[in-house]
Amino acid sequence: MNSTTHEKELDWLQPLKKRIIAGLLGILTICIAVTMIFIVLSLRSRLIKDSRLKTQELGSAIESALSALMQARDPDMIQQTVDSIRDNSSSIVKAFIIDRNGRIVYSSDKSEIGKTLDRFAEKSCHGCHAATGASPSETTLIVESMGQKVQRNVTVIYNKPSCYSCHPPAGRINGKLIIDRSLKATNMMIMSTVILISGAGVICLMMVIPFLSRGISRGVNRYISEIMRQHSERSLLYMMMERLSKTIDMHELEHIIVEIMIDTFSPDEIDLLIHRDGKDHKVISWPSEDNRIDRKKIAPGSELSALRDEWAAGRVTEHRVSDDRRTLLIPVAKGNRRFALIVARKTEGTFDPERLNLIRAMESHVAVALENAFLYTIAITDELTQLFTQRHFRSVIDREYTEFERFGKKISLLMIDLDDFKKINDTYGHVIGDTLLKDVAGWIGKSVRDQDLVFRYGGEEFAVILPSTDVKGGKHVAERIRKNIHEARFDDEGVSIQITASIGVASCPENATAIKDLILSADKALYAAKHAGKNRVAVSEIKTAS
Image (tube, rainbow, N blue to C red):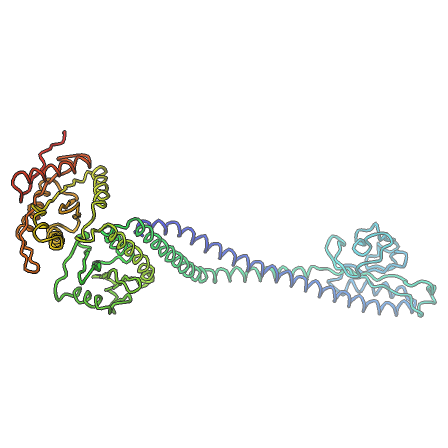
C-alpha cells in the first residue's frame, strides 16, 4: 500500500476518531447526568418521606393532647392549643379540627370556624376523597393550601368509650385533626442539594474529561492503528494473491515477486534466487539506487554466495531475520521442493516487526505461484534443448506485439538455422545430433540478455525474440550468436564437430507492422543468408510504408 493511499485512509479515520471520542465523552456526560438525577430524585423522595413521617408524628402527638382536652370539655383550651400549634411552629401553615359532618369546629384561622367542607367539592380534599363513597386512600399527602404546597396530615379522632358522654356510642369517628405543614424548608433543602450535586458533577466533568479525553484518545488511536494494521495486512495479502495469480510466466512472476517485496517490506536491496535444475541458480536483483530489476551474477566469496550455498545445502528452511533486523531471508518451498530464496536488506532503519507477520502468508502464496509457473515452464519447454517451444513462441510474440501497439515498443526477431545439420545426423547419428542441439541451445542462451527469449522453432531451427530492440541491435545480437556458435567446438566420445549457423533478422516496425509479416521477413532474411554462402547474418531488406 503506497503512502498516498495510507494518507487518504488517515484523512477518513481522523474525523471518525473525533466522533468516537465525542460520542464516548457524550455517553460519559449522560451517565454522570443520569446518576446525578437519580441521586437528586432519591434524596428528594427521602426528604419528602422524612417530612411526611415528622408530620404524622406531630399529628399523633397533637391528637393525643387534644383528646385529653376534649374529654375535659374545655373548648377554649382546645382552640388555644390549636392556635399555639400555628404560632409555635414556623412550618405549620394551618391546623383545624372538623366534626364527623365536615364542619370546622376549631381552626388556627378563626374565620373558617363553622364552615362545612364538602370533601368531594373541596379541591384540597380530593387527594384523600377521589370519588363519592370511596374510602380515603391517603392520610398524608401534598396539597395546595393558602397559596402554597403543603404536606397535609389527617389524623382521625376515633369515638372511644371515654367520649360516649358527649358522642353517641354508635358513631365510629368523632372528627379529624388536619395539620398543613409547609414544604418550604424541605424544598429549599432539595434545591440546595440539587445545586450542590450539579455543581459537583460539573466540576467533576471539568476535571475528569481532559484526562479521560487523553486516555480515550490514546485508546482510540490504538484501536484505529490496529484497524489500519489489519486492513493494511488484508490489503497486502489481497494484492499478493491478485498479482501472483495474474501470470504463470516465470519471467513476469520473478518481477512481480520483487515488486511485492518492495511494497510489503520497503527494503533497500532485494536478491531473488530461483532454483533451477542441477546446481544452477538464477539471480534477480533490485537495488533502490537505480530502481531496476535485472539479472545478477553471484560474486565468489560474497555474502550472497554463502547464503546460496547454505540454502542449497538445505540449511535455510524457515524465514530468518538478522539480530539487527536489517537482513531478511525468506525461503520459498513446497514440501521437499525448493523454489526460491528471497534476500532483502535494509541499509537505513530496520524492518517493521508488524509487517514481518505477513511472511508466512507470503511464503505460501509465492510457493503456489512458483509451482504453477514451474509446471507451466515444463509444459512450454522443449524436452531436449530446454528452450521454449514453438507453441510458446506464438504466445510470446502476440504479447510483445500488443506491447508494440500499446506503447510503441520495438521488437526484433532472429530466425536461426544450423548449416548442413542433416549431414551431421547422417554421419554421426541422431544421438550425437541431439547432443549437439543441446549444446547449441546453451551457446545461444549465453549470447543473449536475460529478458530475451530463445525458442526451438523446429528441428535444427531456432528463434530469438528481442524485446525493445531495433534492427541495429538485432543485427548486433545475431552476429554475437553466429560468432559464438562458429567458435565453439562440440566434443563427445571422440567426435569433434564444428558447426555454423545462418541467421535472419527482422524488426518491427522497420520491416513489418504485423506479426505474420515480421515472421515472414525474418524467414526471408534467413534464406538470403543461406543463399549468400551460410555462416552469416542477413537483415531483412523489406521496408514498411512510412
